[in-house]
Image (tube, rainbow, N blue to C red; front, side, top):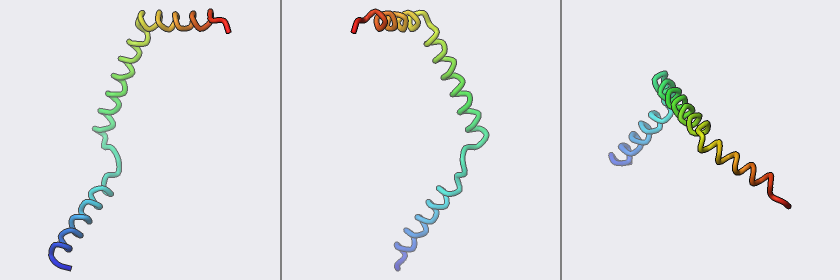
Length: 69
């Protein structure tokens, strides 16, 4: 093989090694992921427990129970 083929093989080997060396998230990534999940949970809790959502769900349940089959 020529110099180009050798360069391509070396590049492929470097890409493969870079992909294999990533064993998972680091501590900082876990911390950021945990904070993001907690913030999403807090926002979701605020939305779900809001008056609009509770009244909408109550209306849906009332309509479903009062429907005759």
